[in-house]
Length: 416
Image (cartoon, rainbow, N blue to C red):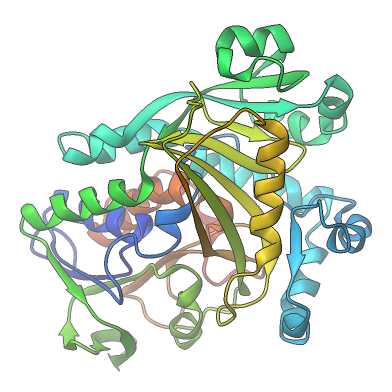
């Protein structure tokens, strides 16, 4: 069924699920949103807040396989592994590292450019005329390097961004200080990327969107989805801890927790948790004009409402183990080196689970084994940036409107 009054159940209330619910509601659908813990209770709360339009180059670039072992044994590198988890990780890791080729980087960067290229505009459109608009701040995204040779060492990444049509400006140390006096003396070289932006409180932003959805007549439930009832190749109802919920269409957008339900829908794209960390400095003495990627440490520093959030690090360790201390300590050491003059009242630590696919491309589209179920998950580092457009695409599919974009790279039945 398509058109107005179509009943849709959206499973997952992170940025992807909430965006999908809002766009469906605007299209006239009767939408229920369900989440096991409530809006923005997972990764959508703890990310770096960047609207990272240029984040189109995957972690798996050529040469990663030779570098990774050394990174794992260097306490100052942003790659960590819980070694007990390695046997379970190996099947995914083989597929993941097999994608570290020029051909796959080309394919991934093309797909991600389609998703992310206008992400700041997508957020503005999603939040327009809602309280969430107050959290959207379009602007520049900076990259800071110790010196120009360090920038030159990443020419592969920047050449791909240039090839994909992204504009950027190289900056001297004086340029960085002119852009933001708080950066004076902290970097020897930098890059400014316009047409990006920042969400000044990602968790509050997603909650504000969910509150708007409810205020406009949407239903928000708390509960676990455990399975689906089917008939003649379609799903008729979701089985949940809040009872059976019938609908005409269903959306699965539960991030890294999508795996078990997705497998039951015929989806075999490998999915793994890529654990990320942040440390927030409360009431900091330093406020940045623009968010900045500290290239040497591969972490982002962004000024949020009353906090300086430093977010990054990659750790493979599964969904069950608690946070590790080493990533937190690495972030704190790096911040102390970069901002030795920083004072603050308190710190807040957080660890969350990024949903990573083996080919670094999100899984978006119609489930192979159920024609009225649609999925949107697997956004690894770019969930906040890509959430609104993912939601728009899914709403268009469900309501029968043309997407006008080739989404084959995102297909749930692709080989990744």
